[in-house]
Every structure is written in structure tokens, then in C-alpha cells.
Length: 291
Ligand SMILES: [Zn+2]
Image (tube, rainbow, N blue to C red):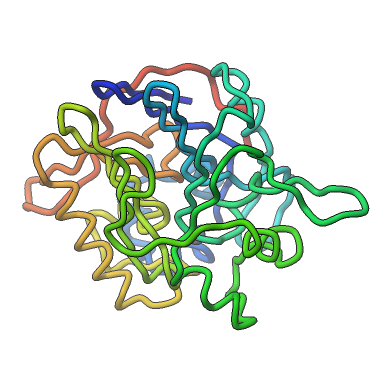
């Protein structure tokens, strides 16, 4: 679990847990030759390690949480092993409580990004985990669900989608959703997938790009889709837009599935292709869950 200070802003990756992905299933757009040439990108058993969690953005007394992890889950499916559920522990470990969160801003409505948004309330409907937070999601992301369309990988309807529909505020592309945080709608992975650009007092930026990229290799090879992507053409457009943003001066990125390399910048490799380069960030704790 790492944290990074940028002027007046502190960004802390609240790790919820670990996921071990079956690469042929989940990362089915990545050719076998890549893995053969990059044995460092896979675990000893051939699976690909990814993390799940949220990014805590602190500025003065204001706290924004971007995404809410997978939630409590210990599961093995044909495409992944999941061991998650630590996000509230990691939040407490950095000295905050759920009541301290002012804004929960979601990149999209997949199950591994909304897990801690609501707590089941016995006998009643789900209640917000972060009682004082505004819950934000793009209108485009919510729209299919409002029409009864729940694409594969979506959050549970009764536990997340329905309660979210009652409490959330939607926004449009380019809108400032919290002080110094602007939403950039980058659809393709999902209908209204959103990235967030966090700007510090000195104008330094961090692009929080959600699931536009699941693994660093996709920054170098933007045509390599992931299984859940709903529109691969729009993923290409989104990735081009985000990469251009990441190459602006004084700009870093945050990849929520990138494990302990979640904070990085885009550099160009010898062939002139964009490449993910982790930046130094303070290590706070070891990962709270492993697969
Ligand atoms: Zn996703």
C-alpha cells in the first residue's frame, strides 16, 4: 500500500485485496507471445497478479474516495481468484473512518469498484457505507442500468445498483466533481467509464484512469483489450485520450489494478512507444490480502 504527496494533495492507494487473473480468460486480448517474453509480468503459476481498491485523495480536511474496491470476497472463478475485503481496515490504518469521506466518485459500476459502497442492512435496503459522502457516477454509466441492462461484471442490482440510483448524483464530461478533481468520461470499458484528473495547488496532475488499462502492457499496446470491455473501438479512443493526458508536463497516473506499481508516469521506450514507469511512492503497509 503506497502513498504519494503532491503539494497540498495526498493520494493513498487503499488496497482492498488481491486478484489472480487467468490471463487467457480475462486478458484475452494479450497474445501468448507477450507473456513468454515478459515472465516478470506473471506469477510462478502463470496467473497475472492484480490488486483491487480505491484511491483516497486528501486535501486539507476534504476527502474524496475514488472507487470502493471489491468488497468482502473469497472466491475462485474460471477467470480469477479473488481475496478482497480489507478496504475499511486500510482506511482505518491511515487514520480515517467511513464518516470522514466527503465524496465517493466511481469510475464505473463493475463489481470490483463498488464493493464497499453499501452495507447490507438486515431487513431493510442497503445503506451507504460512507454516510456523509456524496455518491457520484457519470450519467452515461448509470443509463443502461436504468433501462434494465446490466452488462457482465456489473455490481449486484439489489445491493448496489438500486440503492446507488436513489442516492447518487450524476455529472457530465469535464465537470469539476470535487475541489481540484475533474471528471473525464472515457467510455469503452463500460458505457460511461470515467477517469478523474486530480490537480494540486502547484498545477501538478494525477490521472486516475480506472479500468481503461488493467495492466501496464496495455499502455504500450492499446489494441490489447480486456474481456469485460463493452466497446473496443471506444477503448482505443479512451486510451489515446488518457495517454495524451499522461504525457502532459508534471502529470502522473494511477492504475487501480496495478498492485504496488499503481503510481507511475508514461515514458517512451526505445521504439518510441508509450510505457508505464512506476514513480517513487512511500510504502505504508504490505498488501492486506494475497492470492
Ligand atoms: Zn471494470
